[in-house]
Length: 100
Image 1 (cartoon, helix red, strand yellow):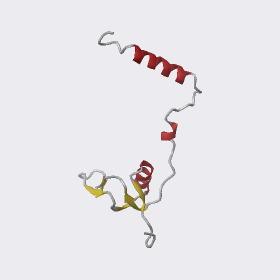
Image 2 (cartoon, one colour):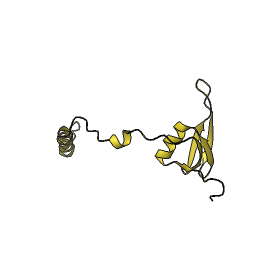
Image 3 (cartoon, one colour):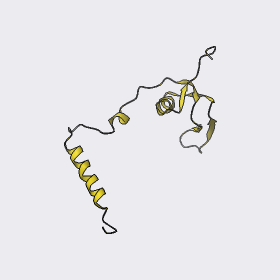
Image 4 (cartoon, one colour):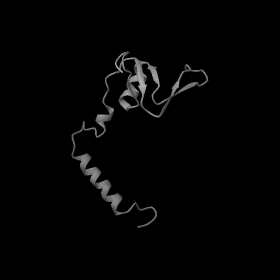
């Protein structure tokens, strides 16, 4: 095995990948579950579950300004941010007053 040769393990892995993907239907997408459109989450208040999140508050073409949120903060999100963060597991819907 030389410096440029990936070795037998890498060659066999490439061959297996070629066989596996070559035998699949044309429309097969191994990452399809990740690429499928997610249903949009409604805009509103969410509780941050992630350790922290930097929310961009400046508009396009303006100097970048962010507001840092920490775990447990209640944040108001638009539909795009809510969908992205909710499906990523970074936020959960805020409890309705009186729910606890």
